[in-house]
Image (cartoon, rainbow, N blue to C red):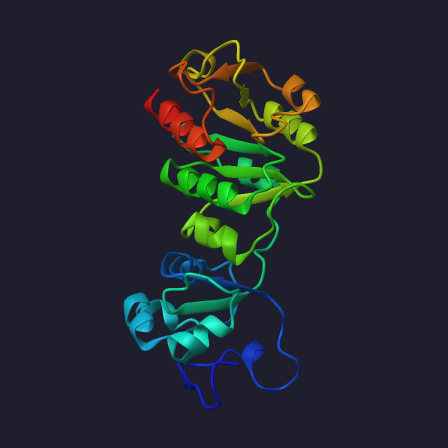
Length: 259
């Protein structure tokens, strides 16, 4: 707990009162993730603990949606795993409500739609960095396999720098079936691999595209790659064999938007 007598501010929602057990959630920290979570109407915030300076930086407009407590930096740190770079803010939040892939894809836009499909990328730092690039380049959704992908967590949210609440992060049971669904929605499915058939700029010249990224260890699984319409590579100097998957995602998204 953040001290014996933390100061409480703003109105208290009925579900956040003192009667009955407090709902369980996970702790999100850092200024950018906290701002994005507070601004997201789909995100339920159970508790907010901040230093006075962090509260000023976030602002009363965002903090007005939830009861919050002012505490010292050490008290904030006690709520979080050791070494967490919290910047004076910690939010206890619930997982976002599940979004159905067909629901997300059903919203038509004038802009070219891009979906990222992450096949067994389990490192939350890599997944978070990919989410951050996805937000920067206007990605419609990031699809992951529910059993082999990082769940919502403080580490993932911090690496994503707020993008976890900006981009639809959709766990699915079966990646191959999700690619079938994307095909039915007229997405051109491209596997990004070191041994791809052509440069990415040629493989995805127009229309909506689903870009599949695999883990750095085992790459894209055979059954997943077979669901793709093309395989592509990022042209690079022979002095370096490959890029970190999150760097490759950023370069590929830039190329898709540039094209």
